[in-house]
Image (cartoon, rainbow, N blue to C red; front, side):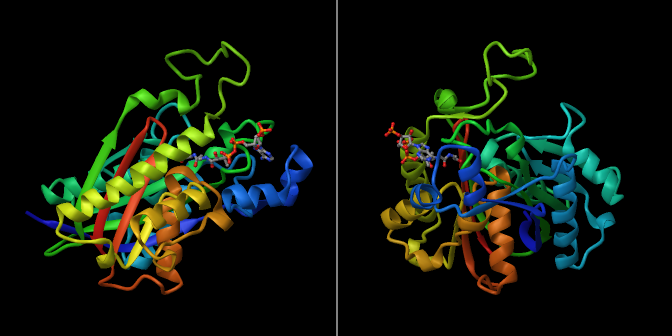
Length: 322
Ligand code: UT7
């Protein structure tokens, strides 16, 4: 069987920045409260008319360039997103069209903030079994479109963005292991009640926006991220000391710190972009990965642990040699 390695990374953030000072003008909050409880100082917000496909396209072009490849080299596109441009067709098919590559499979995966990890796992399995040679794997969301800007418990956290990797067939890892999980019992802790099948006509006010029971999500997230890291490392005969860079879903600074502490992992080995990006849902992990690759922290040969956690709940981890 084949292995799969990351050949290049890319990311994109919309131009507009929304600061905590801006939020102070919009809702009853303070910049100090937001920083203390979340670590977020600013987040990017897509311009009117700027879509998830637009963000995905920019991130993908950067990843292709970093990999030294052309779009025609790609034979699989998977996008993790919860905020597609349309009900259908998928963002992935539209991205394929824009990049100018045709014929290979292209589809979206909906696993909310774990979307990129789900997409990466699936692409890895395609390549392992000769279903594809080179995949474009994207995490992209315009989450601010489903935020209720009157709800101070959610609007402070989220931002928009996209991250992408080119995953290609290789003789050795690359990806060492990958695990996905879900538990639908937690639906109402973090969700958007309105939907296609249950009806857009809002049965109650604000049903089309994110609702979250923040402190409950917080507890499950920390516990799950810690357990999953230990599980995937043990399954591969490794310990936390073997991880050069830990890249968890960038949910909230306090979740990241609590997870690192429980794992006994020094925060200096964790990539943390929460301060500048906020929580960008499926984009958060590939965005953080790209930032740390481009600023030189992540080097070829480093062992990385990527961990996602999101609505559903869904969660998943990918252990890899960069
Ligand atoms: O991908 C996973 C995505 N989800 C998450 O990462 C969410 C994880 N959870 C969190 O990040 C935190 O729960 C929040 C940041 C959302 C909230 O922080 P918290 O420390 O759990 O606060 P809380 O919800 O327990 O609320 C504490 C107080 C409340 O006031 P009272 O009832 O004690 O008077 C809230 O009304 O803080 C109040 N509050 C605010 N105050 C100022 C809630 N939001 C704000 C705000 N500014 N923006």
